[in-house]
Image 1 (tube, rainbow, N blue to C red):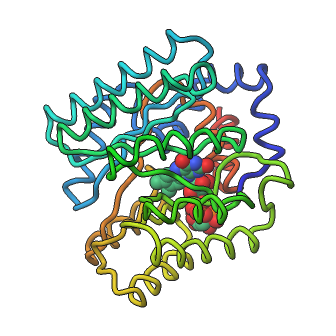
Image 2: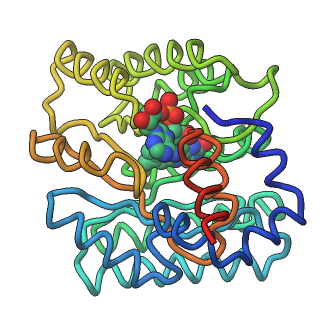
Length: 303
Ligand SMILES: Cc1cc2nc3c(=O)[nH]c(=O)nc-3n(C[C@H](O)[C@H](O)[C@H](O)COP(=O)(O)OP(=O)(O)OC[C@H]3O[C@@H](n4cnc5c(N)ncnc54)[C@H](O)[C@@H]3O)c2cc1C
């Protein structure tokens, strides 16, 4: 559950500048980010593949402010797909629609996403769509719905903390959607999202049950042991084999558990971020867990 105050402070330009430029931040960045360039992420995924774990490539970056930014992100995603083909690593590619210009030109964003889904399909992999702040949910779901008939393998992230999510999912029941279920990582207002851990966890559990009954190959993206157990029980109840659903976790978090689950026969994927625009991503990871923040502050003050 995100610490909203921390995310608020993190958005202040001065704080951002201090942390982004601070060399002492680097060990903390390294824990959560595979590296500055695509090759670093490919290497990290190769290592995971050796333990039977798949990858989810994540080019770091958030909303762009001009069409050139969207074009440049699309080019970077295409380069990643080409590299997947060349190296043969087992990974999907996750995209952020605001990075592809969702807020500037939705039509162009759909065109970019379609091209990426097609290129991914051609090299035997798939695209996953990240879910961002609540302001973008309606458009993100609608882009997914436009592309899904042509690319049924496409996966959409859905956030359990949003009050609207059960309605969004019910609206997609006809297509048996392929969903990545997450708790939600952004600081959202009370009207849009549950704030209490107990409420978020209860909705997450409810949505697990919904997805195992109404979705396709659900991906449970969480490090929360009790929700993962809930998913295993839902799989047993609905007759899904251990390999018919996915457990997804983040690079640098509970790596030992990821390996254990893969050894136990589950389909596990690690979300592997790379790129230089790591600041907002790192702040979300720190805001999720006081222990991460302490680790970070210790690194900053250790010299
Ligand atoms: C594969 C994947 C893709 C994601 N995609 C999106 C997305 O598209 N949109 C979005 O809004 N969010 C996304 N998220 C983030 C998600 O919303 C949560 O913020 C994040 O997963 C933490 O929630 P949790 O379910 O692990 O549960 P929590 O209740 O936060 O954590 C449960 C336990 O996991 C461990 N843990 C959790 N987080 C950390 C951490 N940062 N550092 C160390 N230990 C930790 C701790 O042991 C903690 O007690 C994604 C997460 C994953 C795993």
